[in-house]
Amino acid sequence: MIKNRKLDHLGMAVDNVEAAKDWYVSVLGGKVIGTFYCEGDPNAVYFVRVGDTVYEMYQEPVPADARGKIDHVAYLSEDIEADYAFCVSKGYTITTDGIEALPTFWDNGCRYFKILSPTGEQVEFSQKC
Image (cartoon, rainbow, N blue to C red; front, side, top):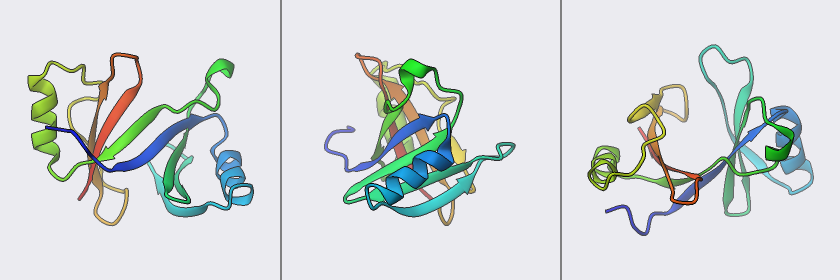
């Protein structure tokens, strides 16, 4: 069951990741708690904590009408395989290629998958390795 999970972060696809990160730090008093790079992408992925909320910011081409919108909501997983199996058994639409891994994120990488909610947003379940 995937109920009552702790919020991990809010993911935002932005068209200028440096400007977005700088704004959340300088205007909202946020603190960068993680800076990571995905293979083949020169742009950083930033995790910025503002109060109790963490924002993941990454750069992608974003249509004008999508700027500033949350791309996904991520919840913590303590057993990513069990959570994935549960979502598959319930017939939820998986929007990732199964359980994916980001070996360069955090100290030992992380594993995650995303499902589609009935209203169209992506919900991620993420487990740090």
